[in-house]
Image 1 (tube, helix red, strand yellow):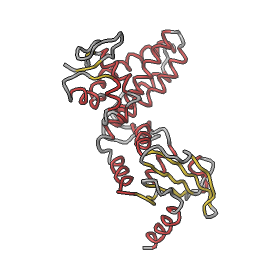
Image 2: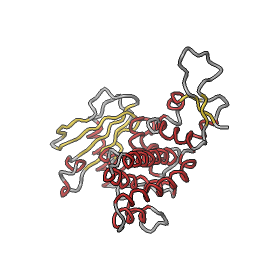
Image 3: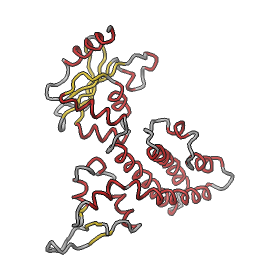
Image 4: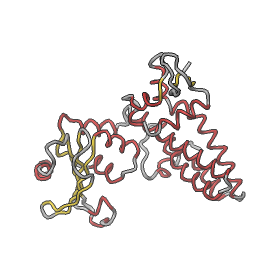
Amino acid sequence: MEGNVELTNFSFYYGNTVDEEAVGAIAYRNSDKRQQGLLVYDFEVNIVVVYDGTPDEPPIQHSIVGGERCQVVSIGLDDLHRELLSGTHKVLIKCFLEGDIIKDDQDRLSNLRRDFLRFAEPFREQKLFIGFAHFLQKYIDAKMLLKEERVLDAYHTLLEGLHYWGQLELIERGIHPESAVWEQITGLNTPVRKLYEELTVSTETLGQRVELALLAYEFSMISKLESSSALLLRVLRSRRNPWTIQELILHPELAPVGKELPIVMRKLVYQSLVKEVPIWRGVRSYGSEAIRYYID
């Protein structure tokens, strides 16, 4: 009962600092004073304020509230969804997932947090798509660097790509990837750790290690391509007429993965899983026509 009273006071006190236009807010109190200087731990309180559209408020504000240092992060609901998928804004995600909800119109924040923690669809499918796109990008970058004989850069890029590969292996098993991916995949039947060892402790030359790793990357990428792209393939099949890339990016199911969509689409075309129509007969051409995509 005492804990509920404390939370009520906490919610009331900091809830009064939240803009009335916000759909919700979550406050995270730092209880570990030993970790000051580590971003999220450098403030007594962090508040994430969520808006329906683009906030009028600055994205970051630092202030003193009731004698305590307070960091306020303002973000739109769509951008929050995107950050949860990408996992790059560590402070924001920690506050959102572990903080106390102090304002929540229509339970939108509590529902979003519940679905994310349960790894419910579409979160798992969207996160798989984004992780695969990053994995594919690292493969392409490393291959180009090796072609330019920048072997050390290619090696470093492949090591970075292993992190995304490890994330994919976890997501495919329904496990939330965390910052300590290598600890999470320990004990799992996955080739990622073995490839890491081959890249780092092998007796072969650096160039040979990079070439062998690229072969492993390519095999894994092709084997994961269709399952990781299920979200996009389903939308492509949802109508008979071919799609432009603009139409796909604006589709409600694909909007959260819009930035990663082009690179995955081109790989699907290259592997003949998706076909392209350079000229769509239903539209008159005036010298320029969008490429349209479809599945047989």
